[in-house]
Image (cartoon, rainbow, N blue to C red; front, side, top):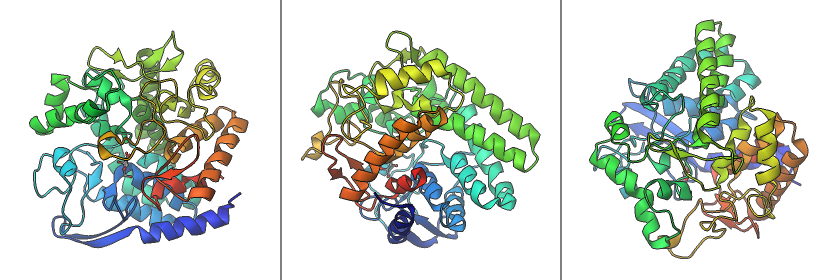
Length: 419
Ligand code: GLC
């Protein structure tokens, strides 16, 4: 079994290897960040930055803070934070960047966001170094980002946020997105088109969020994104208290509670006893069991009746999520389930069954919040086994444990935060 000290050394090495730095003519500032994997993912991603900062908080809080500061350099006036920043202007931006941005050629950032983990990361950093100056510096910015989400992503005032692209969930190839876009069967050839259909329409609508949500061709209420938002609001609330701002603390706590009630009202399925995402303003359920269905376990205030049903009926179900290496990102019982890495890009899909350590991290934290420590420990041990055998890979086969995707992948070091 890997010990914490070893893991710290390994994480430090990986982060050092993945550092990218330079000067941005666009922002007139120098930049420095940890890329998710220098080979293949050389840009700065929002939720990767948050996860990596959580890991860094264990051994270098200053570095963790600088990672967050670097991301905040590009915050829009309305509070928006992009999912990817293409800092290096000499680098050729990929095709998908233009698809996810208003701009065509010189793309600096995408115009979509990603799960808002930053407040959670900041609370982890604060727990370890009690730096109130840092809180005073960053909380107004994170608060502004949360307000942007509340104002722009909740058009019908349901208290749940809607995402406009599969990429905003961070789990871009889950079958729930193609379903919302109209492809309800497992057709590997049509899949890529339907998975990107919302992005094509978003581009056509020039990433005008109000217009996009009004046209209502996607409007996806995704539980994983929303539970991160809810817990991040609670983190913000607790942190605001640390700097004696009771008004903001109250405000974000209230938002968290409202969103949790809405999640139960709109996404809980009383027949299957599981949470499903919804799409469109009519909140139609997407009846596919994926890791997002278990994400509400991460909510510290989730009622025990939901927790027990999720754990007993689904998480521990060997036909669904509990495979030799838990947890499957798509339930084995779904036709969309595919545990392996397929040889051709056309049919290759990252989030169709393999194990991802950031998703495991979130569910493990949830299990611990609700007293399911033994099950949490079992998943931690299995996750550690994956890393010991295959290294810090992007994702893993849930039957064989084979490591797939990028090597030296940043957020897989989250294992450190679980030991
Ligand atoms: C993949 C993942 C996304 C992640 C990115 C960088 O696109 O699906 O969640 O942020 O890689 O690691």
